[in-house]
Image 1: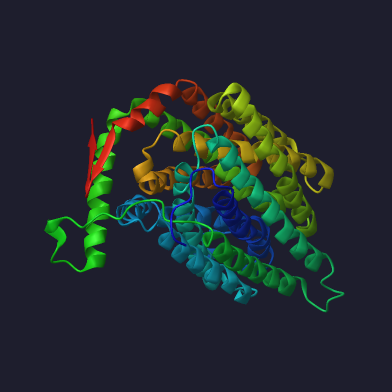
Image 2 (image 1 turned 90 degrees about the horizontal axis):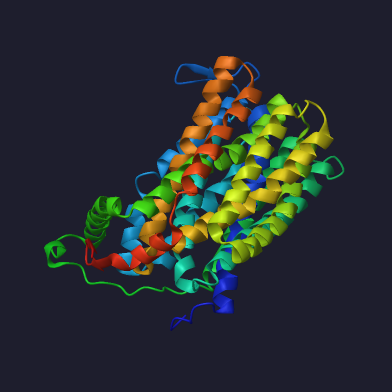
Length: 453
């Protein structure tokens, strides 16, 4: 496509939101339901699997995979974002990571009973593609919106994701419920579901990215890199600019305060998302069909939750709306602690509560951060955001694993996550949002250098 459309262009925003529709099939169908269920029931033996000398069950292996999946992209996201901003290649990076991740997500169809190593490898590669594509997807947000629309558009993206992920999962759920009539074993129906989710991501992802435009202007490589091969030169620029930006971040107190607050409360959010399926299977002893219906309920209610918190933010402000959502997460964890095993209805109530607050917390955090960062380096700064998000996803699963291991009960591990929301909320309340938004005008980027006025 030639030319760059104006901000708040409906076609561009639709395409941007459709990428959430695309990739949410993978996160909902595969990551949230089928892979955890297969990991517990089919892939990991009943006696456990010895990983680096440590005997772990399916629930524990799942929490470790989530943590290590986050570590894989910890160091490279800001560098890739800086390269994308410098070379005006946000769209190209997003497409490459999306196709890479979707191919490996589709390949999870080939995982069979007892295939622990293939399951670990394919899951981590699919996760790398997913997280990498989200860095550049988020980087478009400040470039296609204005300050008065960024909360609403961010919420729209999450709402499209819940709709797309929910629809994909509904189709897969029908296959799971009627697998016998279709002449399939349950594990084969689940494998088909994972493959279908990967293809959904691939097809709709290519369609969505086709609606996006490169929004930046490519810069010439500094003379010092003239003799290097272009890929190595861009890599050097990315590292140098990332280091320069990191050093100067210390002078932005309110932005850093928000980042630390986000790391804390998002640690709780990401851990709940990651652990809930394993908790439902292992601790609550629920059938895969019950878990599937609960996830479908989360998706449906989260659509209204995302739009609802977007409207609340317009009325009371983004930060107060996030604080309301954080307080509700503590209610979610308290209810999760008391949910009795083997009973579907209390679990459905838990699913409804999660859906109510999930979209609001994520969408508004993304848009609030986007309103605080320099637009000409949005991909780089969202690369940092991905690091913050994934760093926050590292500690929680490992703490959950440790508490579960020490106490022998994951109920106490669930309740221990409240501290993340309390600490994050207290710190977020001290952020001066107006000062943080004003400070983004102090940034200036020249070649591989980041300067602050």
